[in-house]
Amino acid sequence: MASAQPAELQIAAAFPTLIGRRQFHDTPQLNEQLASLILEREQSSPSQDHANFGGWHSAGDLLEWPGEPIAMLRERITESLQAMVQASTQLPESQARSAPPRGSFRVSAWANVARSGNYHRMHNHPANAWSGVYYVTAAESGDTLAGVLEFYDPRPFTEMVDTPGSPYGQRMLIRPVPGLLVLFPSWLYHFVHPSTADSPRISIAFNAAWRAA
Image (tube, rainbow, N blue to C red; front, side):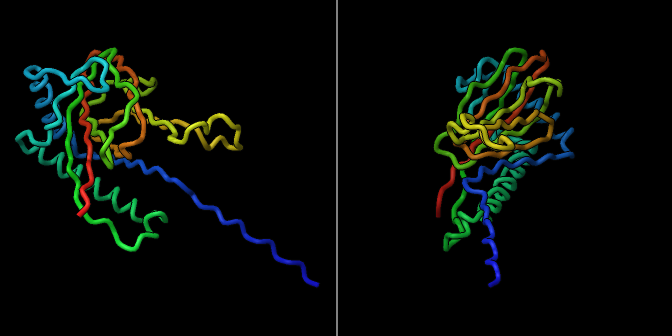
């Protein structure tokens, strides 16, 4: 009698967390213009108090500011959000649904200016689908954690059991680079390590709330 063939082990990646990164290279002039607008606004507007410890946090109306640099940034955020939606709809969890998502995003954005000692506490962004950050300037050294955006594995207690390869409970670090745009699920907890440079690190953060059609 022939021996039975062993059943093939099927492996699926469940509960995926999509994080998008898009590095724009044609940004020196755009970033210079954005930095000028933001630093000028910093001098005339009080800082908002959210997750930031020190530094300057603008109101959430940055995408309503006038000017071509803001319009260009808005366009790039919109394109990147569409790419994240496309990636999400390719996941098996989304493919099982009969109809593609229909709706639109309501996007709000604000500027952050961080100098030495400033950081962002652990937080997330309730009531939004995606959040993100665009780096205008990055004054930090690549050899330290200064100014680094850090995400934690969202699954609780995964670090409590030793698993071969240590695939769970890891942190994800993103170093600020001018022209880098990062997108992530708004529920994902994150924080920003303290800055160490006296020169400003300027970033633009945003939220995208989904409104189903």
